[in-house]
Image (cartoon, rainbow, N blue to C red; front, side, top):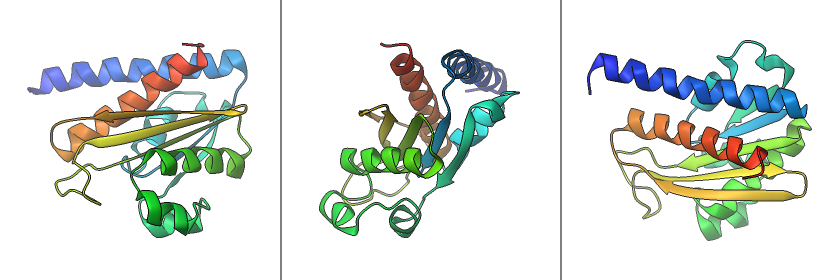
Amino acid sequence: MGTEEINLLRKIASYEEVKLSKILKELRLTLAVAESITGGLLSKRITDVSGSSVYFLGGVVAYSRFAKEALLGVPKELIDKYGTVSREIVEALAWNVRDLFKSEVGIAITGIAGPDTIEGKPVGLVYVGIATRGNCSTFMATFKGKREVIRENAVDFVLEKTILLLRGG
């Protein structure tokens, strides 16, 4: 993939951040994020949009097991049972970051960017959790490619799912 193609893809991706911004402002919702696989990339992309301070309350990069437990209150027993990359963990992260920041929407993302597998799970596996009023929707995807590509695809995936969910889709 050449530089022009990458720049075009980034422009298209940034459109998702703008769409999310408009929806959050229109619905008067606040947002907080818990990131693992993306290492802060989701927060960066959200805050690339001018005016994001109106709805974005903050985020936690919980890259390690310790951070998931200590900063976001994920029970050790839950991690022991399901591993750090699972539907159960991403759901706990989404609820807990929502509670931590007292936001209307809590988004969490965890996964494996590679090059090594973790917990016997494949490289490219991503889980997303989106906690809103009384409900947490979870999504799973598997992406191929190098670390950077997997992480960018993971951010695009979570933005797309959040937009669809907030629009009632």
